Amino acid sequence: MNPFNELGIRHDIVNAITELGFTNPTPIQESAIPVLLSGSNDFVGLAQTGTGKTAAFGLPLLELIDYSKNHPQALILCPTRELCLQISNDLKNYSKNLPNVNVVAVYGGANIVNQLRDIKRGVQIVVATPGRMLDILNRKAIDFSQVKYVVLDEADEMLNMGFQDDINDILSTTPDTKKTWLFSATMPKEVRAIANNYMTNPHELTMGTKNTGNVNIEHEYYIVKARDKYAAFKRIVDFNPEIFGIVFCRTKIETQEIAESLVKDGYNADSLHGDLSQQQRDKVMKRYRDRSLQLLIATDVAARGIDVSDVTHVINYSLPDEIENYTHRSGRTGRAGKTGVSIAIINSKELYKIRQIEKVIGKQFTKAEIPTGFDVVEKQLFGLVHKVHNVEVNDSQIEQYLPRIMDEFKDMDKEEVIKRFASLEFNRFLDYYKNAPDLNTVSDERGGRERDGGRAGQSGFTRLFINLGSVDDFTRGDLLGYICNNAGISGKSVGKIDMKGVFSFFEVENEIAEKVIEGFKKVDFHGRAVRIEVSGEGRSERRGGGGPNRGGDRRSYGGGNSRSAGGERRERNDRGGDRNGGGFRDFSGKRKEGGSGSGERRSSGGERKRRY
Image (tube, rainbow, N blue to C red; front, side):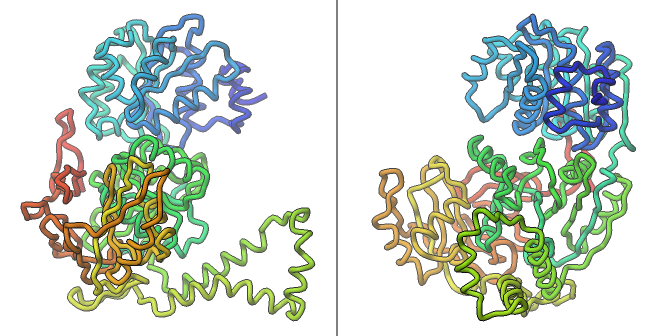
């Protein structure tokens, strides 16, 4: 008998989750399900991401709903559309053997008319993000007067994202007799305030110590100079050939730039951030879940709710502003009892942040050394050997080609064949890393920059206009590939790509600008002629530096940039002057996501958020 039967879950649901691979309940499921099945308690569950919280509240909820009644009986609020879709899909999978189960996902970025239509048809369980749910309530398109259960999932993150007022407004439309179940990875004061305001003597369950990290995750940090961060990051990735990871950045712009640079350098990578449409986000996530992407570069908000199995590494390219967010980031790996590694790439001035995080998660970081070029080459070589040794041979398909293969190698003995196969990968990395500097050494900040395969940065670039943009379903990576394929150029010859709605700008090396223009003279996109011309805004120059754009200081069209004392680039708005912490404007004047500031900021609930 499946242990879930013994917890009180009916056979139809157990049969469905058995097909999904649920054989033994996780600790939080084992402890929470019997309590929630009684339906008589408010509940607070504290557990890290990846411990099975969705099933912990989803299975009891499916047991308690009356499916003969087709009105909202349960409301689940969560911070992001990815998590909203994940929860609704999980509930549908759990209940596939039950008749008349109606679950509707309500989230921003999708057509609200379709969501209203689904609600009108009848629904028992609504899974929603706060903003869109409030919009539908304001339209008086749903009635929560008979809701019996409200679940607040990832409550700490909803408050971090400023949903306090929205949550209050939504809960005010539900009956006082409802039961509230709150799940959170951490327990800051704001979450405790929700428990006090909306719950009566809740049953509190804590798996592990409050706010601590997953015990299956190893934490490492690397200290590098700001100018070497991107080179060090690539070397860490190369040193882990089987990496399947999520890379966290602080801002949308940083996320885009790193993803673009990785694509140019031949990595399977893409970005996930709030400026993408839902269709673009779905496209990126499908590629990542299918493992056609090796690295997902994301902001904190965009990555919430991502539940992808077997993530091997989480890399903090930039540390988060709030300590608690580190717990959420690292929780993307080491899920469902598996092990993972969380890496932080910092400069020496950020070491105190590592010490602060250690106190919160209750685990010590290991100081690691950036691998040398030789270390990377050796690791890649034996990674290839291991892959060849374990490859599955399709005898029936390859049989027809074996005579020609054997004939090709007839003048070589076994050792020679092995040596040549190994050299295919070995030579590539040996050539790339043969003169790689030791990034662990200290060098003069004002001296020459140690670079890791980056562009020299002295030649100029021409800024070009193209009449394709995001409305044509292009991401920056897609557009880069499209340009390179049609113009017959290398990705390393392309500089910054500035995506707009119906058009875009991109930079290419001066000497190939005419070649790119000529290459597109007869190209059409879905019957529309593709037009490329030199932008009237002038040219941009890149000077020195070794950051993700290999350009260090960048002169652009809005008023230039300045470099901080630590060597890191600060964007400057078009009036000049640095803007830190409060957001800044890009060169089109559009408001962009804020960078790190100093001191503390207040959440929407008025509480001070803890900074380092």
